[in-house]
Length: 181
Image (cartoon, rainbow, N blue to C red; front, side, top):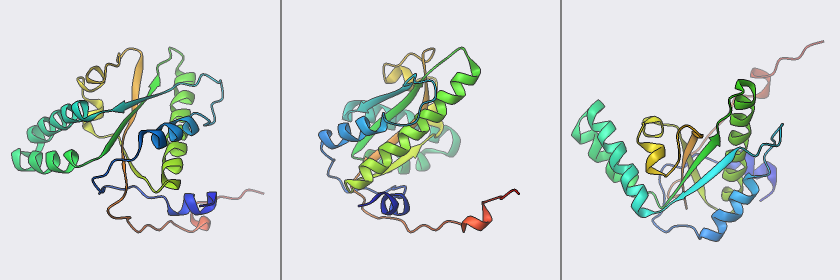
């Protein structure tokens, strides 16, 4: 797949086949993610491959959050949906005391996630980038062995072979472009 095709065809995937992609493919994608633009060359991205035991704990943490907000039926629906995800990856950013650097580093990690998503898509693997309530819960980062005073969450990525590839459209460039004389 060429770059233009990869960018135009990549989708957020929420429904995966049960077979998990090979670890080596994911590691290659992480290596490509690390080539993201990074103004101060701080390389602030950190990746955490999440195995079945830890993902089950995240599923339960999320179910408790959903149950508190929407009740037990909604929690059970989320538990089933999340338990079916074959691959999990947490992406964090090193924290900085410099507010400007922190913002630049966060943007660099977002670029790294896009690189990662495109690299996986090129292998036929879809992703879903989540910043949902579970990723902001005080128990989430410690559950991953991450010190909240040193790193911040940028996303929780699900990955796997798509069961369904959603259709998507975008506005024409004339609706998002401002040209100045």
